[in-house]
Image (cartoon, rainbow, N blue to C red; front, top):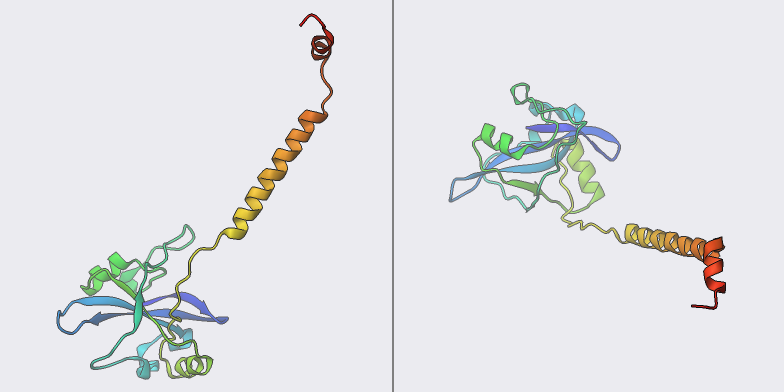
Length: 172
C-alpha cells in the first residue's frame, strides 16, 4: 500500500506500507517501510525494493499521524491512501492493527543509493518529545507585562472627587 503523496528532501513520493507476517505466531502487522520517489510507484519499477523470503525489520512502534480537515478520505477500492488509517488497512490486509515504522541509520549516501534502487528510505530511530518551553516563556512574560501595565494604570489614575473628600475627612 502506498500513502501519499509525501515529500522527502523536496521530492514527491509515497510511503510504502507492507503487511509483515511474523515468524512463529503467524500474526501479521503493518510496517511503514519508508519513502520512495513518485517515479517508482509501480512495483515493477522497483524490484529491488520488494523483499522476498525471510526478512528482519528493525523499527519502532509508533502511533501514526491523524487525518486533518484538509486530507481527503482514503479510497482503498482504488488503492489510494492519503493518511494511515491503521484499522482500515489492517482490515483490508487481515492483519493486526499494529503500526511499525522501519528505521535506518541516518546516512545520506545510503539514502541516495536506496532511492535510486527503489528501496524505501526509512526514518532515523529518534524519539521526538514536545518542547514548548519557549512558548511558556513568552506566555508568562506577556502575562507579567500585562499585569504590570494594569497595576501602573490603577496607581497612576487620579482619585475621584468622592475619594478625595473621604481622604480629607478628619472625622474618620
